Length: 315
Ligand code: G3H
Ligand code: 13P
Ligand code: ZN
Image (tube, helix red, strand yellow):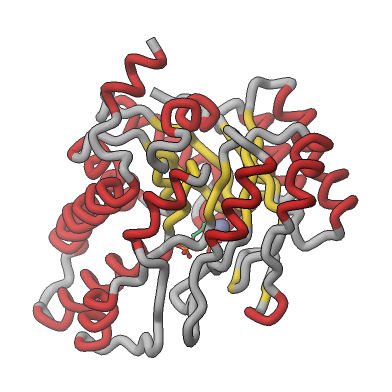
């Protein structure tokens, strides 16, 4: 069942975070649904602009509609990740997405508000909810590249004004994470002090943490042992998710860790089966590993085991 992120946030706020997972293809879609059913978790499917154009924007919609039938117990939102104004409007008009993110965070404050507000007006007119970003994460996003030195933490004093003037439904905050596999060099970590200040100014308002992959070191070692070259990769300590959730983080975005599962499975498989050329055995192996990975993440987010209570709340 497709629901808005707003409904999922109402159930989770202050208690646990909902996993928001990026998908690009059939195997990820199947693994994601399987992992969320196995762990009895509500979830958010995220589709980036790059994912929409990887094959055709209608292909992922078709996969998700089919998965909704294959897994009728699933409760999830469908969300555009890091949209610009044009892609947000396209998704709003599609009638399929329950939620969009407008990422105008690379603009000055007033311009970010102006663009975000236009998207909010269009989305709310169709019953669709909106996430926007204030501050700037380091790392690489599709249409924005920010190096660590230029990453800007969210200013708690601007957060309330941003929410009031835009009318958004959730706020993506920059508190020290970045996208990709190389998040922290040296001693950096999450800025819980900044998060606590934001929550003080926005009590009960759902916050979103991007760039939340953990980049597990055992995964990196297996990839490197099978011919990969991921040197110095480092991510967010997953034991901190629950603390973030208590401080108002209700959606936690994870993409890179799923890509690492894909990389490990494929590198090891072809190393160990040099004679193989059938795409299904490895596809099946990946779907199983991806499902396990998703279920494990949901445990760490606290969303595992929450499906029944969310369904009761929706009834
Ligand atoms: O924030 C970016 C997400 O990891 C999506 O990545 O734009 O390469 O699909 P992508
Ligand atoms: P990671 O690169 O840490 O997985 O972050 C994903 C993300 O924020 C998608 O919007
Ligand atoms: Zn992101």
